[in-house]
Length: 81
Length: 183
Image 1 (spheres, chains in turn red, yellow):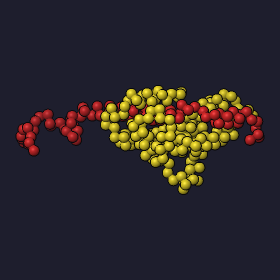
Image 2 (cartoon, chains in turn blue, green; image 1 turned 180 degrees about the horizontal axis):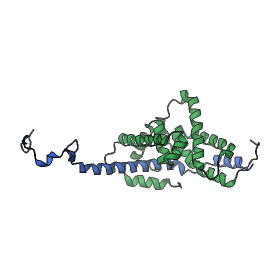
Image 3 (cartoon, chains in turn green, orange; image 1 turned 30 degrees about the horizontal axis):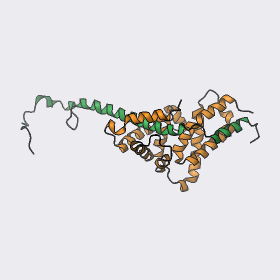
């Protein structure tokens, strides 16, 4: 393994004295904002797929036999059933 | 007593969405239509217990879910588990959007625990509020929120979506538009 430069452990670069500014992978925490945004986009896609799936059925409307059933039931007198 | 035509129309207007929910529960279109019929018979026989002006869809969904639950308990041994079959059943729907991503989504949805899938569908597809969904499912609002969150997280994991491109946003959008018919 070759590193570009030798790091002197006893004299770290001044900026690295702020551990809260970097995440566990050493990336600046500002990158997390884009991860959060991606999460939202993923959830939006999931929502779209879910509705598309559901709407496949919804778009079939009311099947004739069910429409007939409701009309028949709604027009009969009490006790007729 | 004849049914108020306005009430009848509210019932009919709910049927398409009720069917979609029934299919998600039953994993079988024929059984779902039987369940919808049973629900309507039950609902119209007890229409006096519906208060006009309240939420007709939530009332019908609650009846349907309760019927499904009691029937499911009876049939548990023969039905075993509908979870894995949901994806398969949905493949018999017209493939307006017949695409790999869509089938992957169906399969992933089928892998969710049934209580999580139910909550996700009621909130994310049927369009019920968390409160109405909690009423329909007979549990606390917090429970529904938790189920929906877990369902979304699990779906994202199952689909291993790490790029927006993986999901074909334009296609998904077109699929939504093609579905139509929701109000």
